[in-house]
Each structure stands twice: as C-alpha cells, then as structure tokens.
Length: 261
Length: 314
Ligand SMILES: Cc1cc2nc3c(=O)[nH]c(=O)nc-3n(C[C@H](O)[C@H](O)[C@H](O)COP(=O)(O)OP(=O)(O)OC[C@H]3O[C@@H](n4cnc5c(N)ncnc54)[C@H](O)[C@@H]3O)c2cc1C
Ligand SMILES: Nc1ncnc2c1ncn2[C@@H]1O[C@H](COP(=O)(O)O)[C@@H](O)[C@H]1O
Picture (cartoon, rainbow over the protein chains, first blue to last red):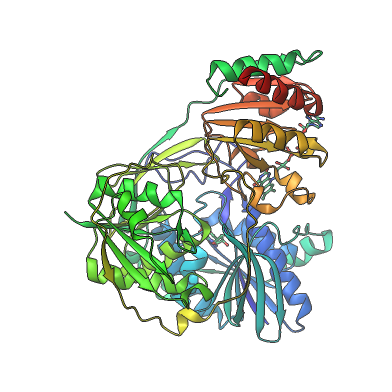
C-alpha cells in the first residue's frame, strides 16, 4: 500500500503563540514541532502499513526550512521517506493554496492508495485541508475517523458526527483524516531515531511541482486577516476554601449576584 | 440587494437554532435565502419566521446517504442560479468540509469558525486556544463563511419564504464516500452543548460518577460537558468532550468540576463569559481562569450547591 501522510510543523501550543506584524502566524519566534494531531495520522499510517506488507509511508510537509523537523519526527516514528516543500513564495498561504500545493506534491509522489491527514492543524485549525485535498484530487473523502479498518481495497471508518455516529465506506484510493480517538501515537525508539538519519528526505520547491508562484502566498490569498489582538488575560477571581459547606453557599451567592439563580 | 445563501442545518426537517442565527446574520449582509437539502416537507414557515425571503428546496432523499461532497455540489448549483453576495454555513465538522469543497469549486475564499460577522462581511474569530481575536475578510469570489453557534441572537423577522423548487445533478464522483450505517445521537433531554447558556462539566476528578455534575446541570437547566480524561475513561461519549478536539463552547456560565485546566481543555471553554470551578487542588491551573473558585471535593460541594439553589428558588 502506498501511503502519504501530511504532517504540519506548528508553533508549540503550550508556548506563547503570536502573530507577526503582517498578521501571519509567528513561526520563528516560537518553538515549532510536528502538530500533535498529525502524530495520530502518522500512527494510523504506520499501522495500516504494518497490516499491508510491502507498504511505503511518505511523510509530506509544507513549511519554512525549520519545518523539516516535522518530517524527521515522522521518519523517526517509522515513516519510510519524507518530502519537504519549501519556497519563500508559499509564506502566508491560506488553507486553499496549501491544499493546492499538497495536491500537486501528492501527484508527484505517485498514486497513493491512502492520503492521511490529521483532523485539524493545531495552529490554523480550520479542518479545511482534508476536504480540499479530496476535492482537488477527485478522491473519496473519509474524514474525522475515530476508528479505521481496511480490507482489500475497501475502507470503513467510524465518524462521530453532531447528529449521529456514522460508518463511512469507500473504495481506495481515498483521503482519510483521523481524530485523536484513533489511538495514542508511538514514541520514536532509539533505533527509530538512528534509522531516520539514513532515510531519504527530499526537498522540493514550487518549480519542482510545476506550481506557479503567483498562485500562492500572502499577497494572493483568498482571505485576508485585517487585525489580530491578544485577548486580555483572564484575571483570577475570588477563590474560597470549602469548609463544612461554606464553599457551596459562597458559590451560590456568587451565582445569584450574577443572576444565574 | 444581493441574496445571501444560508445552508439550512437540520435533523430530518427540524431546523436547528444555528440556522436562525445564520439567517439573522445574513440579513445584515443582504437578503437571506435559505437552501434546504432534504426529503419530505421543507420547513418553509420556520425559515420564513427568521427572515428567509426565498427557500431553495432541493428535495433529494439520496443525498443523505453520502458524505459532504453532494451538498457542496448543490450549493455550487444554487449559487450559479442566485449569484449570491455570500454563503453562510454552520461551523460544524460537516459544514467546514462543505465550505472547503465549495470554495474550490467557486474559486472563492473561505473563513471558518466566525463568532461574528459585520455588515461589511468582516468576521471575528477566536484563535490560539482563545488567546487571540482575529478579524478577517474574504477577498476573492463569493465569501463563504462558516459561523459558530451563538454568534448572533436569532431575530424573528418575517420573510416572504418564497419556495424555489430546485433540481440539481449530483456527479458520481461525489457519491464515492457512502454512509453505510448511521446511529442517531441519543437525545439527552438537556440543551445542546454548543448552544447552551450554561455548561456544567466534569473531569477525571469525578472518578467516573457524574451524578452530582448532572444534578447541578439539571437544576441550572444546563448542558453537561466532559474533559478528554473523562471521555477517554469511557465515562461519557465523545460528543460530550469540551476542548481542542471536542466542542468549543462559549456559554454565559461554565462550571468546571474536577478538571485541571490543561491548555487543550481551555481551548474549548476559555471564551465563556463567566467561569467557575470546583477542584480540590488549590494549585490547579483552572483557578487562573475563574471568576469564582471553590477549593473542595466536588462530591460534597456540588450536592450542597444543588440543594442551596433549590432552597433559594423556593
Ligand atoms: C492532541 C491533544 C488533544 C487534546 N484535546 C483535549 C480536549 O479536547 N479536551 C480536554 O479536556 N482535554 C484534551 N486533551 C487532554 C488534556 O491535555 C488533559 O489531559 C485533560 O484535559 C485532563 O482532563 P482532566 O482535567 O479531567 O484530568 P486531570 O488533569 O487529571 O485533572 C483532574 C483534576 O481533578 C481534581 N480532582 C480530583 N478529585 C477531585 C475531587 N474529588 N473533587 C474536586 N476535584 C478533584 C484534581 O485536583 C485535578 O485538578 C488533549 C490532549 C492532547 C495531547
Ligand atoms: N503545511 C502543511 N503541510 C502538511 N500538511 C498540512 C499542512 N497544513 C495542513 N496539513 C494537513 O491538513 C490537516 C488539517 O489542517 P487544517 O486544515 O489547517 O486544519 C493537518 O492535520 C495536516 O495533516
């Protein structure tokens, strides 16, 4: 099985994430890492590969130079090869342009049986890219999967929707996005870390993909961020210790003062 | 005035509250037109009540059997007919996916998770776990905006509700992902998590016993939420999860019980108007966010609180 897993390099969510003066995400001033939610995608890619002998897993990432770290982490976890797309022209691209470049890269990698993504990036968090990839590649969309099973060329996935829990079925090739309910991602082993150093990691530019630089980047994005502002931090309110039921009374007083009761 | 298309979010013809909110926002931008995709009688009156001047009715029993793609094709075809000024869709998982596909078809920009949209189409979003507020605008094509629940107070304004029966063609490619089985969500009898004015949540600190959390929720007429730790332990289904990978809620009041306040949980509740917490660890990070906090055991504080509220109500 030929599997491509899309991994994004994102600013660490536990750090102080910021914006640049041009309202793009600060990807330099804050430590970056492989998006936690894409680790679940890598894990599913590896599990599917283990179940299907002769499979190959390619980790694919678009991002500035430092983003190669996300691909390396995927290689350390067990992916076979990596592709990192770097081009200054891509900076500031929105989800739709990102999906365009990813789609062209996937075509160049070869015809995959499954393209796997995370359920959302932890920075932009739009969840647009997986559906956009399915649209651009003309593949069935099997998204927000919490359980994944394949048999031959058939795929079944459980999806916890708002109104119902559904089982989605399709015939490979497909675009699959997986949630953090699919199972905890593995840690890279020492052996995995050593092996990763010898795995192929290609770097491609837009030219390598035949994508015109005028189609991507901040200046031609189809959406524009006009303003970003830090929310005033919440200031801690009153904290009381419960002693013999005093806590419940004090809380009831507070709720009453706010007209909730 | 340009038509503003609103994709009707409904369960078997029952219009969800978010649709009324979208119609209210649509009125700021132009003339609201609802797009109803479903089978059976279209809820035209319900839509007209909140301002729908037109209701495009796509009567198709088959679409229900497929994931997302056919709905994007429907909207593309209705848009070709209506030439709308903007298209509004609920910001659910499905809504955002429809928006993504539609944006590519129409070569239009898309904005997700708007918590507000002004008359000029400028949207407000809350990002980075609620730590930043962003304002954005679509600059290409027909703006496609997915809007979160509670983004507007639904206003009743009578619209004409003129039915436009609309025939569409769905490509075979759009039918490639099928819904093989569907288990409707069990009704909880409580308000919808993302729509509720009050949410009472429980975490690992409940030890799996949600009785006290649920009793308080019912006394307050609230929805019940859960942390991922509670969901992963199997105490509540995933649909109850509040946080980065669950629901993002923004109620008037959020009550966190036995929840430590990890960044991923905060991402789902930090923009609540008022936050209170009960936690037996005074060092728990959740206390950094609260308007009022009680350091104590939830198994004693919550039942006492529920009783106290009952007594005060008389
Ligand atoms: C990719 C990713 C996505 C995630 N997404 C989410 C998400 O969407 N939502 C989410 O919630 N988490 C999410 N998490 C998990 C998150 O990091 C935390 O692990 C989780 O929120 C912890 O849940 P908790 O607060 O219930 O448990 P804990 O952190 O274990 O806290 C339990 C708290 O209960 C208190 N307590 C114990 N007993 C009592 C008692 N008797 N009375 C009162 N207080 C008591 C303790 O003092 C403690 O503060 C995610 C994590 C990752 C890596
Ligand atoms: N720059 C990128 N490089 C590689 N994969 C990406 C990139 N952006 C998004 N993705 C993939 O698309 C998923 C959804 O991202 P998003 O639509 O931004 O929420 C992520 O979990 C990734 O798998």
